[in-house]
Image (cartoon, rainbow, N blue to C red; front, side, top):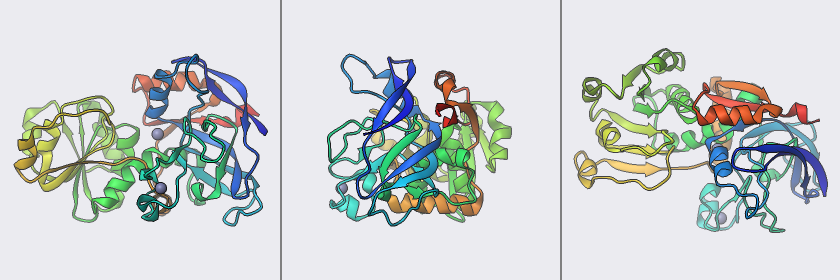
Amino acid sequence: MRTTTGWQATGPTALRRTSLERRDLRPDDIAVRVDHCGVCHTDLHALRAYDRHTNAPLVPGHEFTGVVAEIGPEVTTFSVGDRVAVGNIVDSCGVCAMCEAGQENFCHTFPTLTYGGTDRQDGSTTLGGYSREYVVRESFAYPLPSGLDPAAAAPLMCAGVTVWEPLRALGVGPGSRIAVAGLGGLGHLAVKMAVALGATTTVVSRTRDKRDDARKLGAHDLVDSTDSRQIAAVRDTFDVVVDTISAPHDLAPYLKLVAMDGTLSLLGYLGPVTVEATDLLIGRKKLGSAGGGGRPATAEMLRFCADNGIAADIEVLPSSQVDTALDRLRRNDVRYRFVLDMSDLD
Ligand SMILES: [Zn+2]
Ligand SMILES: [Zn+2]
């Protein structure tokens, strides 16, 4: 076993710096020195559900960038010193129809999650990127294009690809009319990507003071979701409404914004929802969702972001302030993503 240092949960709100074990490199593994790891809402959910008496060890973190520190003997795509990025899945069966289609994120036997997952070979629980080193199969690590800042690129690996996949799958491009509901970690990247894809992009937010931010991100318009006149004016106008709101909420007002044959894509809240069928019937509207990304889409997303100068708007904190980052994220007090600098773990 290899030893590294990381932040392990001790309860629903607390993490403690501790030494962690990583597996010895398998032939197709690389060891990544983790330099930057984004702080995702999923980390909050995982911590909230964590009970140290009954759960396996929890080290959150599933959007990180770093440098290849060591490679296994059969590794062909990376060399020591290469910049890499890793997202929220680190393995899949490789043979099911979803994997064959390059949608490892939908693997029929469930993809191996970057943390809180079960390693397919030794059955151990995976420990995440809130740590100084991570060991991963080379096929689930991605070259980090040279144009991207490694800190600001880290959130692309979860938040970024989560909004990229549906935008691409729904054919968003020049001429598309897109609304982004909720301007947080996912939403701000959805705006940047939709704009760069050539779509006319509108932010729908109840926070009026986000108007300037929306414009800075490149959005063409902002609709105040609490203003019924503004909402009525954009009824049935958007080909895709990207819903990134993470709390439970009524979908009806957002379905009303969808144009005929358009789609409401639910990306932030993934619990049970209630829909009036008539809200779909009138205008032949569709309700969809997506999560994470397959390997081809993840690689494509990184190239697109490098080519278009897209990365997350971030606030970097030393990893020793992880509790502060989580606490402020809990209160939505970040524009728009915290990234932990792991160099203080040396
Ligand atoms: Zn995430
Ligand atoms: Zn599979």
